[in-house]
Image (cartoon, rainbow, N blue to C red):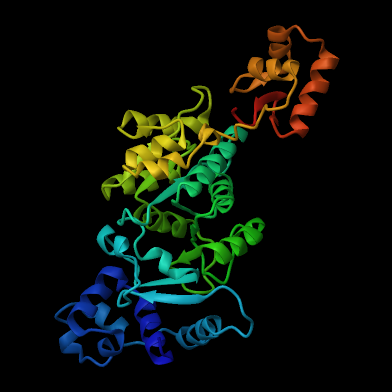
Length: 384
C-alpha cells in the first residue's frame, strides 16, 4: 500500500458518522477510497445523508499525524515480525470476516498475516476460539491451557483475545504446541493491554499473529473489547468457553459465533462456582458440553488423524499431574476432588493430622498440583 492510499483508507475509517456500513456503500459505488474523495457532493448524496457528506468532505484534524505514525510503524528501523494492514480490497483479507457482517475496513497485523485468510471457513485450516473469564479458578486456567495445547498439537490454530485469565492461558497453551495462535486485540497494535502480557504478545507475534481493527494509538476502551469479539467469533470454526460468569463478554462471543453458524462448546464446572454459570447457561441453550479436546475435534468433524494427535493430556490438564507421587499424596488429591475445599473438611475426609496435612498441601502446592484460594480453601490445580 502506497502512502497516499494509506492516507485515504485512514481518512475513510476516521470520518465520523460513516462507519463500516457507509464506507462499504461508498467503496461499492466508487471503488478505492482515493476515488471516493474526488467525488462531487451530488454523487455522494445518492448514498449518504447531508451530514455524512459534509463530514466526508472535511479532513479529520489528526489525519496527517496518524498517517505518519502508521507509515513509520509499517516501516520500522529495526527488524522484527512482519507488520501490515489488510484492507477490504486485499486478497488476503479474511473471507470469514466478509461473511460475518460488519467487517472492519482495515485490519492491522503483526506476524503471519496470511494466517487469517482461511480461518473460520476452511477445514484445511482448522481453528477454534478459546475464551473465558478474566478471573478464572485455578482449574479454569489449567483447562484453558491444556485444551489449547492439545488443540494445537492436533493442528488447530487457537484464537483468543490476549486478556487476563483464560485468554492468556489459552495463548500460552497454544504456544506449547506446534500450531499458531492468533490474538485479536482491542487497542492499537502499537500498544499491549494488559501490560503484563507484553512478553506473551511478543511471543505470539513471533510464532503466530496479533491482529486488530483499531488505529495506532487507540487505548484500552471498554467498548472496543466488545467490538473485537465478533472478529474472534468469525475467525474460529467453533468457540470454546472455558469459564464465564452470566454477565460475561465471553457469552457475547459465543452468541455471535452461534449466529454465524459456528459451533459453540462449553466446559461444565462446579454448580457452586459463579465462573461456571455462564457455561451452564450456554449448555442449556444448546452449546456442546465438552470434557476433552477430542470432544471438540469430533464435533468439528476433523479427520481421525488429527483427533489421534490428542492424548490423555486433553482431559482437563496434563496427565502427568500425579505420576510419581506416592500413594499418600495421590489419596489426598482424590479426597480433595475438583471443587474448593476447606482444611477442616479435608481433614475430616482423610483423617490426617493438621500439621501433616498442611505440610502435604504445601508440597502439592509447590508442585503445582494444588492451588490455595481465598478464604482458606484449596483446589486441585490440574486433573489427572
